[in-house]
Length: 429
Ligand code: GUN
Ligand code: ZN
Image (cartoon, rainbow, N blue to C red; front, side):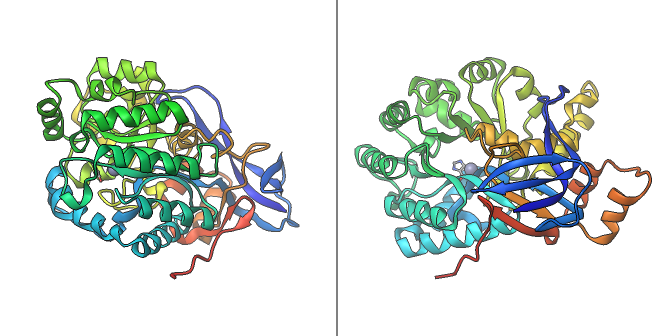
Protein backbone atom coordinates (compact mmCIF):
# COMPACT_ATOMS: atom_id res chain seq x y z
CA UNK A 1 0.00 0.00 0.00
CA UNK A 2 1.22 3.46 -0.93
CA UNK A 3 0.11 6.49 1.07
CA UNK A 4 1.08 9.98 -0.05
CA UNK A 5 1.04 13.57 1.16
CA UNK A 6 2.96 15.92 3.38
CA UNK A 7 4.77 13.50 5.67
CA UNK A 8 5.19 14.39 9.33
CA UNK A 9 8.77 13.19 9.79
CA UNK A 10 10.99 13.19 12.87
CA UNK A 11 13.47 16.06 12.88
CA UNK A 12 16.28 15.52 15.36
CA UNK A 13 17.52 19.13 15.18
CA UNK A 14 18.35 20.44 18.63
CA UNK A 15 16.37 23.30 20.11
CA UNK A 16 14.96 24.41 23.44
CA UNK A 17 12.04 22.67 25.16
CA UNK A 18 13.43 19.19 25.00
CA UNK A 19 14.92 19.46 21.55
CA UNK A 20 13.09 17.08 19.31
CA UNK A 21 10.50 18.13 16.81
CA UNK A 22 8.88 17.09 13.56
CA UNK A 23 8.98 18.58 10.07
CA UNK A 24 6.70 18.29 7.07
CA UNK A 25 8.05 17.08 3.75
CA UNK A 26 6.23 15.99 0.60
CA UNK A 27 6.54 12.34 -0.30
CA UNK A 28 5.03 8.93 0.23
CA UNK A 29 5.19 5.80 2.36
CA UNK A 30 5.01 2.17 1.38
CA UNK A 31 3.35 -0.07 3.94
CA UNK A 32 3.90 -3.78 3.98
CA UNK A 33 3.04 -6.35 6.62
CA UNK A 34 1.73 -3.68 8.96
CA UNK A 35 4.97 -1.71 9.05
CA UNK A 36 6.47 1.19 7.14
CA UNK A 37 8.63 -0.44 4.46
CA UNK A 38 9.73 2.68 2.60
CA UNK A 39 9.81 6.44 3.26
CA UNK A 40 10.36 8.53 0.12
CA UNK A 41 10.72 12.29 0.12
CA UNK A 42 9.95 14.03 -3.16
CA UNK A 43 7.01 14.89 -5.37
CA UNK A 44 3.66 13.72 -4.05
CA UNK A 45 2.54 11.03 -6.49
CA UNK A 46 -1.01 10.96 -7.84
CA UNK A 47 -1.22 7.17 -8.05
CA UNK A 48 -1.17 6.45 -4.30
CA UNK A 49 -3.76 4.19 -2.66
CA UNK A 50 -4.55 6.97 -0.19
CA UNK A 51 -3.69 10.63 0.31
CA UNK A 52 -2.42 13.15 -2.19
CA UNK A 53 -1.21 16.73 -2.56
CA UNK A 54 -3.62 18.15 0.01
CA UNK A 55 -3.09 15.45 2.64
CA UNK A 56 -0.91 15.23 5.70
CA UNK A 57 0.30 11.84 6.86
CA UNK A 58 0.87 11.76 10.62
CA UNK A 59 2.01 9.02 12.95
CA UNK A 60 -0.97 7.92 15.07
CA UNK A 61 -1.31 10.10 18.13
CA UNK A 62 -0.44 8.68 21.53
CA UNK A 63 -2.11 9.54 24.83
CA UNK A 64 0.24 8.87 27.74
CA UNK A 65 -2.29 9.21 30.56
CA UNK A 66 -6.03 8.64 30.59
CA UNK A 67 -8.78 6.78 32.44
CA UNK A 68 -11.02 4.43 30.45
CA UNK A 69 -13.96 4.48 32.92
CA UNK A 70 -14.08 8.27 33.13
CA UNK A 71 -15.56 9.36 29.78
CA UNK A 72 -19.00 9.58 31.38
CA UNK A 73 -17.83 12.11 33.99
CA UNK A 74 -16.18 14.58 31.64
CA UNK A 75 -17.35 18.03 32.63
CA UNK A 76 -17.95 17.60 36.39
CA UNK A 77 -16.64 21.10 36.94
CA UNK A 78 -16.07 23.14 40.07
CA UNK A 79 -14.38 20.65 42.40
CA UNK A 80 -10.79 20.21 43.51
CA UNK A 81 -9.10 16.84 43.02
CA UNK A 82 -9.92 15.12 46.32
CA UNK A 83 -13.60 16.18 46.32
CA UNK A 84 -13.89 15.29 42.64
CA UNK A 85 -12.53 11.82 43.34
CA UNK A 86 -14.91 11.21 46.22
CA UNK A 87 -18.07 12.73 44.78
CA UNK A 88 -17.78 12.01 41.08
CA UNK A 89 -14.98 9.63 40.13
CA UNK A 90 -15.22 6.82 42.63
CA UNK A 91 -18.99 6.40 42.09
CA UNK A 92 -18.38 6.24 38.33
CA UNK A 93 -15.65 3.62 38.75
CA UNK A 94 -17.92 1.42 40.89
CA UNK A 95 -19.88 0.71 37.71
CA UNK A 96 -17.04 -1.53 36.54
CA UNK A 97 -18.09 -4.12 39.13
CA UNK A 98 -20.18 -5.15 36.15
CA UNK A 99 -17.72 -6.51 33.60
CA UNK A 100 -20.08 -5.89 30.69
CA UNK A 101 -20.07 -2.22 31.60
CA UNK A 102 -16.27 -2.27 31.56
CA UNK A 103 -16.37 -3.83 28.08
CA UNK A 104 -18.88 -1.34 26.76
CA UNK A 105 -17.06 1.64 28.26
CA UNK A 106 -13.76 0.47 26.79
CA UNK A 107 -15.22 0.01 23.33
CA UNK A 108 -16.78 3.45 23.46
CA UNK A 109 -13.54 4.99 24.74
CA UNK A 110 -11.46 3.34 22.02
CA UNK A 111 -13.95 4.47 19.39
CA UNK A 112 -13.71 8.06 20.64
CA UNK A 113 -9.91 7.93 20.70
CA UNK A 114 -9.61 6.45 17.22
CA UNK A 115 -12.02 9.12 16.00
CA UNK A 116 -9.57 11.70 17.27
CA UNK A 117 -6.55 9.95 15.70
CA UNK A 118 -5.26 8.32 18.90
CA UNK A 119 -3.87 4.90 18.03
CA UNK A 120 -1.95 4.21 21.24
CA UNK A 121 -2.47 5.04 24.90
CA UNK A 122 -1.59 4.31 28.51
CA UNK A 123 -4.77 3.93 30.52
CA UNK A 124 -6.10 3.29 33.99
CA UNK A 125 -8.93 0.81 34.36
CA UNK A 126 -10.49 0.39 37.84
CA UNK A 127 -9.77 -1.77 40.85
CA UNK A 128 -11.90 -4.59 39.37
CA UNK A 129 -9.59 -7.33 38.04
CA UNK A 130 -12.20 -8.69 35.64
CA UNK A 131 -13.01 -5.20 34.40
CA UNK A 132 -9.33 -4.53 33.75
CA UNK A 133 -9.03 -7.83 31.91
CA UNK A 134 -12.07 -6.95 29.81
CA UNK A 135 -10.48 -3.59 28.96
CA UNK A 136 -7.26 -5.33 27.88
CA UNK A 137 -9.25 -7.81 25.78
CA UNK A 138 -11.26 -5.08 24.07
CA UNK A 139 -8.19 -2.98 23.32
CA UNK A 140 -6.54 -6.01 21.77
CA UNK A 141 -9.64 -6.77 19.73
CA UNK A 142 -9.76 -3.21 18.42
CA UNK A 143 -6.12 -3.43 17.33
CA UNK A 144 -4.86 -0.35 19.19
CA UNK A 145 -1.57 -0.23 21.04
CA UNK A 146 -2.01 0.11 24.78
CA UNK A 147 -0.76 -0.22 28.30
CA UNK A 148 -3.76 -0.71 30.59
CA UNK A 149 -3.56 -1.20 34.33
CA UNK A 150 -5.83 -2.53 37.02
CA UNK A 151 -5.98 0.30 39.56
CA UNK A 152 -4.46 -0.73 42.89
CA UNK A 153 -6.17 0.72 45.99
CA UNK A 154 -6.36 -0.67 49.49
CA UNK A 155 -7.41 2.44 51.41
CA UNK A 156 -8.60 6.04 51.10
CA UNK A 157 -11.51 5.14 48.82
CA UNK A 158 -15.00 3.67 49.33
CA UNK A 159 -14.95 0.10 50.60
CA UNK A 160 -16.39 -1.15 47.32
CA UNK A 161 -13.22 0.05 45.56
CA UNK A 162 -10.64 -1.23 48.04
CA UNK A 163 -9.19 -4.72 48.16
CA UNK A 164 -6.58 -6.30 50.45
CA UNK A 165 -3.07 -5.67 49.14
CA UNK A 166 -2.35 -9.40 48.79
CA UNK A 167 -5.37 -9.96 46.58
CA UNK A 168 -4.56 -6.98 44.36
CA UNK A 169 -0.97 -8.09 43.89
CA UNK A 170 -2.07 -11.60 42.92
CA UNK A 171 -4.59 -10.22 40.45
CA UNK A 172 -2.09 -7.77 38.98
CA UNK A 173 0.47 -10.57 38.59
CA UNK A 174 -2.10 -12.72 36.77
CA UNK A 175 -2.80 -9.85 34.37
CA UNK A 176 0.95 -9.54 33.79
CA UNK A 177 1.04 -13.19 32.72
CA UNK A 178 -1.93 -12.73 30.39
CA UNK A 179 -0.71 -9.46 28.87
CA UNK A 180 3.09 -9.29 29.18
CA UNK A 181 5.11 -6.18 28.61
CA UNK A 182 6.26 -6.84 25.06
CA UNK A 183 2.76 -7.24 23.62
CA UNK A 184 0.91 -4.69 21.51
CA UNK A 185 -1.46 -4.54 24.47
CA UNK A 186 0.14 -5.01 27.87
CA UNK A 187 -0.84 -4.78 31.51
CA UNK A 188 0.61 -1.77 33.34
CA UNK A 189 1.28 -1.67 37.07
CA UNK A 190 -1.04 1.05 38.32
CA UNK A 191 -1.13 2.01 41.99
CA UNK A 192 -3.63 4.89 41.81
CA UNK A 193 -1.65 7.30 43.99
CA UNK A 194 0.04 7.14 47.38
CA UNK A 195 -3.01 8.33 49.38
CA UNK A 196 -4.98 5.28 48.17
CA UNK A 197 -2.20 2.74 48.79
CA UNK A 198 -0.60 1.29 51.90
CA UNK A 199 3.19 1.08 52.01
CA UNK A 200 2.86 -2.71 51.68
CA UNK A 201 0.80 -2.37 48.48
CA UNK A 202 3.26 0.10 46.99
CA UNK A 203 6.17 -2.18 47.83
CA UNK A 204 4.41 -5.16 46.29
CA UNK A 205 3.73 -3.12 43.17
CA UNK A 206 7.41 -2.14 43.05
CA UNK A 207 8.46 -5.79 43.32
CA UNK A 208 6.08 -6.76 40.52
CA UNK A 209 7.47 -3.97 38.36
CA UNK A 210 11.01 -5.22 38.94
CA UNK A 211 10.05 -8.79 38.15
CA UNK A 212 8.14 -8.00 34.96
CA UNK A 213 9.64 -4.81 33.49
CA UNK A 214 6.09 -3.55 32.97
CA UNK A 215 5.18 0.09 32.63
CA UNK A 216 4.42 1.73 35.98
CA UNK A 217 1.87 4.51 36.10
CA UNK A 218 0.59 6.51 39.02
CA UNK A 219 -0.27 10.07 40.03
CA UNK A 220 2.19 12.40 41.70
CA UNK A 221 2.04 15.90 43.22
CA UNK A 222 -1.03 17.03 41.33
CA UNK A 223 -2.37 19.31 44.06
CA UNK A 224 -1.01 20.89 47.21
CA UNK A 225 -3.71 19.27 49.38
CA UNK A 226 -2.72 15.83 48.12
CA UNK A 227 0.96 16.49 48.88
CA UNK A 228 0.04 17.45 52.47
CA UNK A 229 -2.01 14.27 52.79
CA UNK A 230 0.92 12.13 51.62
CA UNK A 231 3.15 13.75 54.24
CA UNK A 232 0.56 12.87 56.92
CA UNK A 233 0.11 9.29 55.73
CA UNK A 234 3.81 8.51 55.23
CA UNK A 235 5.55 10.02 58.28
CA UNK A 236 6.51 13.26 56.60
CA UNK A 237 8.23 11.62 53.64
CA UNK A 238 8.32 13.50 50.35
CA UNK A 239 5.83 12.32 47.74
CA UNK A 240 8.41 11.06 45.23
CA UNK A 241 10.44 9.54 48.07
CA UNK A 242 7.44 7.36 48.96
CA UNK A 243 7.46 5.92 45.45
CA UNK A 244 11.24 5.59 45.40
CA UNK A 245 11.26 3.69 48.71
CA UNK A 246 8.73 1.27 47.24
CA UNK A 247 10.82 0.63 44.12
CA UNK A 248 8.39 2.47 41.85
CA UNK A 249 10.82 5.07 40.56
CA UNK A 250 12.52 3.81 37.42
CA UNK A 251 12.94 4.26 33.68
CA UNK A 252 9.55 2.69 32.99
CA UNK A 253 7.62 4.92 35.37
CA UNK A 254 5.18 7.57 34.16
CA UNK A 255 3.93 9.94 36.85
CA UNK A 256 0.75 11.86 36.11
CA UNK A 257 0.91 15.64 36.72
CA UNK A 258 4.02 16.29 38.88
CA UNK A 259 3.15 19.95 39.31
CA UNK A 260 4.50 20.34 42.84
CA UNK A 261 7.95 18.79 42.62
CA UNK A 262 11.08 20.44 43.98
CA UNK A 263 14.49 20.59 42.34
CA UNK A 264 15.74 17.51 44.21
CA UNK A 265 12.66 15.55 43.09
CA UNK A 266 13.23 16.52 39.48
CA UNK A 267 16.89 15.51 39.71
CA UNK A 268 15.91 12.14 41.16
CA UNK A 269 13.32 11.68 38.44
CA UNK A 270 15.86 12.60 35.77
CA UNK A 271 18.40 10.18 37.21
CA UNK A 272 15.83 7.39 37.25
CA UNK A 273 14.94 7.86 33.59
CA UNK A 274 11.24 8.22 34.48
CA UNK A 275 8.81 10.75 33.12
CA UNK A 276 6.10 13.14 34.18
CA UNK A 277 2.86 12.92 32.20
CA UNK A 278 1.86 16.54 31.69
CA UNK A 279 -1.93 16.83 31.65
CA UNK A 280 -2.54 20.55 31.05
CA UNK A 281 -6.32 20.39 30.60
CA UNK A 282 -6.95 18.32 33.73
CA UNK A 283 -4.69 20.69 35.63
CA UNK A 284 -6.80 23.69 34.65
CA UNK A 285 -10.13 21.85 34.93
CA UNK A 286 -9.56 20.76 38.56
CA UNK A 287 -7.79 24.06 39.28
CA UNK A 288 -4.76 22.07 40.41
CA UNK A 289 -2.07 24.41 39.08
CA UNK A 290 0.21 24.79 36.09
CA UNK A 291 3.12 22.47 35.35
CA UNK A 292 6.38 24.22 34.53
CA UNK A 293 7.07 21.85 31.65
CA UNK A 294 10.19 23.64 30.48
CA UNK A 295 11.57 23.32 34.02
CA UNK A 296 10.90 19.58 33.96
CA UNK A 297 12.71 19.23 30.64
CA UNK A 298 15.59 21.44 31.76
CA UNK A 299 16.10 19.08 34.71
CA UNK A 300 16.62 16.20 32.28
CA UNK A 301 13.49 14.34 33.40
CA UNK A 302 11.25 12.83 30.76
CA UNK A 303 7.94 14.38 29.89
CA UNK A 304 4.95 12.81 28.21
CA UNK A 305 1.59 14.36 27.45
CA UNK A 306 -1.81 13.04 28.49
CA UNK A 307 -5.47 13.89 28.05
CA UNK A 308 -6.24 12.64 31.56
CA UNK A 309 -9.84 11.98 30.58
CA UNK A 310 -12.12 12.52 32.56
CA UNK A 311 -10.52 15.35 34.59
CA UNK A 312 -9.18 16.40 31.21
CA UNK A 313 -12.00 17.07 28.78
CA UNK A 314 -10.41 16.80 25.34
CA UNK A 315 -9.95 13.41 23.72
CA UNK A 316 -7.92 14.91 20.90
CA UNK A 317 -4.20 14.87 21.60
CA UNK A 318 -3.85 17.76 19.17
CA UNK A 319 -5.95 19.90 21.47
CA UNK A 320 -3.99 18.62 24.48
CA UNK A 321 -0.80 19.67 22.69
CA UNK A 322 -2.31 23.08 22.09
CA UNK A 323 -3.14 23.32 25.80
CA UNK A 324 0.52 22.58 26.58
CA UNK A 325 1.49 25.62 24.50
CA UNK A 326 -1.16 27.75 26.17
CA UNK A 327 -0.04 26.74 29.66
CA UNK A 328 3.57 27.55 28.79
CA UNK A 329 2.42 30.90 27.41
CA UNK A 330 0.41 31.69 30.55
CA UNK A 331 3.44 30.93 32.74
CA UNK A 332 5.49 33.25 30.59
CA UNK A 333 2.96 36.05 31.02
CA UNK A 334 3.02 35.69 34.80
CA UNK A 335 6.82 35.53 34.97
CA UNK A 336 8.61 38.14 32.91
CA UNK A 337 11.89 36.32 33.49
CA UNK A 338 10.89 33.41 31.30
CA UNK A 339 12.28 33.47 27.79
CA UNK A 340 10.67 32.43 24.51
CA UNK A 341 12.42 29.05 24.69
CA UNK A 342 10.09 28.08 27.56
CA UNK A 343 7.17 27.94 25.13
CA UNK A 344 7.30 24.97 22.78
CA UNK A 345 6.89 25.41 19.06
CA UNK A 346 4.19 23.63 17.08
CA UNK A 347 6.87 21.31 15.63
CA UNK A 348 7.83 20.31 19.16
CA UNK A 349 4.20 19.88 20.20
CA UNK A 350 3.52 17.46 17.34
CA UNK A 351 6.65 15.52 18.31
CA UNK A 352 5.42 15.23 21.91
CA UNK A 353 2.09 13.61 20.97
CA UNK A 354 3.78 11.17 18.59
CA UNK A 355 7.42 10.13 19.00
CA UNK A 356 7.81 11.77 22.42
CA UNK A 357 4.95 9.86 23.97
CA UNK A 358 6.09 6.68 22.24
CA UNK A 359 9.46 7.09 23.91
CA UNK A 360 7.91 7.61 27.35
CA UNK A 361 5.77 4.50 26.88
CA UNK A 362 8.76 2.46 25.64
CA UNK A 363 7.44 1.85 22.15
CA UNK A 364 10.55 2.45 20.02
CA UNK A 365 8.72 1.45 16.85
CA UNK A 366 5.76 3.81 17.31
CA UNK A 367 5.07 7.50 16.85
CA UNK A 368 7.32 8.08 13.85
CA UNK A 369 7.24 7.76 10.10
CA UNK A 370 10.41 5.76 9.75
CA UNK A 371 11.54 2.54 8.19
CA UNK A 372 10.39 -0.45 10.23
CA UNK A 373 8.00 1.53 12.42
CA UNK A 374 4.47 0.25 12.94
CA UNK A 375 2.06 1.64 10.38
CA UNK A 376 -0.27 3.21 12.96
CA UNK A 377 -1.13 6.30 10.95
CA UNK A 378 -3.54 9.18 10.65
CA UNK A 379 -4.31 10.52 7.21
CA UNK A 380 -5.44 14.12 7.54
CA UNK A 381 -7.15 16.08 4.82
CA UNK A 382 -7.60 19.70 5.89
CA UNK A 383 -10.46 21.69 4.42
CA UNK A 384 -9.87 23.44 1.09
CA UNK A 385 -9.17 26.86 2.62
CA UNK A 386 -6.59 25.52 5.03
CA UNK A 387 -4.94 23.49 2.27
CA UNK A 388 -4.76 26.52 0.04
CA UNK A 389 -3.20 28.77 2.65
CA UNK A 390 -0.81 26.20 4.06
CA UNK A 391 0.28 24.16 1.07
CA UNK A 392 -0.40 25.92 -2.18
CA UNK A 393 0.01 29.65 -1.53
CA UNK A 394 3.37 30.84 -2.88
CA UNK A 395 4.28 32.09 0.57
CA UNK A 396 2.42 31.59 3.79
CA UNK A 397 2.60 33.78 6.86
CA UNK A 398 1.83 30.72 8.94
CA UNK A 399 4.12 27.80 9.66
CA UNK A 400 2.07 24.86 8.30
CA UNK A 401 2.64 22.85 11.50
CA UNK A 402 1.25 25.73 13.58
CA UNK A 403 -1.60 26.25 11.14
CA UNK A 404 -2.55 22.60 11.45
CA UNK A 405 -2.25 22.60 15.23
CA UNK A 406 -4.32 25.70 15.91
CA UNK A 407 -6.76 25.24 13.06
CA UNK A 408 -7.23 21.56 13.87
CA UNK A 409 -10.60 19.96 13.26
CA UNK A 410 -11.19 16.25 13.96
CA UNK A 411 -13.34 16.17 10.81
CA UNK A 412 -10.13 16.50 8.81
CA UNK A 413 -9.22 12.93 9.77
CA UNK A 414 -9.83 10.94 6.65
CA UNK A 415 -8.47 7.59 7.68
CA UNK A 416 -6.88 5.93 10.71
CA UNK A 417 -4.68 2.92 10.10
CA UNK A 418 -3.66 0.37 12.71
CA UNK A 419 -0.74 -1.72 11.51
CA UNK A 420 -1.59 -0.63 7.98
CA UNK A 421 -5.27 -1.60 8.16
CA UNK A 422 -8.27 0.70 8.50
CA UNK A 423 -9.35 0.95 12.14
CA UNK A 424 -12.78 -0.19 13.30
CA UNK A 425 -15.69 -0.10 13.17
CA UNK A 426 -16.08 -1.01 16.83
CA UNK A 427 -19.56 -2.32 17.62
CA UNK A 428 -21.49 -1.22 20.71
CA UNK A 429 -22.15 -4.76 21.88
N1 GUN B 1 -5.33 11.19 41.37
C1 GUN B 1 -5.77 9.98 41.79
N2 GUN B 1 -6.71 9.50 40.96
C2 GUN B 1 -6.88 10.40 39.99
C3 GUN B 1 -7.73 10.46 38.84
O1 GUN B 1 -8.52 9.57 38.54
N3 GUN B 1 -7.61 11.58 38.07
C4 GUN B 1 -6.74 12.59 38.36
N4 GUN B 1 -6.68 13.65 37.57
N5 GUN B 1 -5.96 12.55 39.44
C5 GUN B 1 -6.02 11.48 40.24
ZN1 ZN C 1 -5.14 10.59 35.90
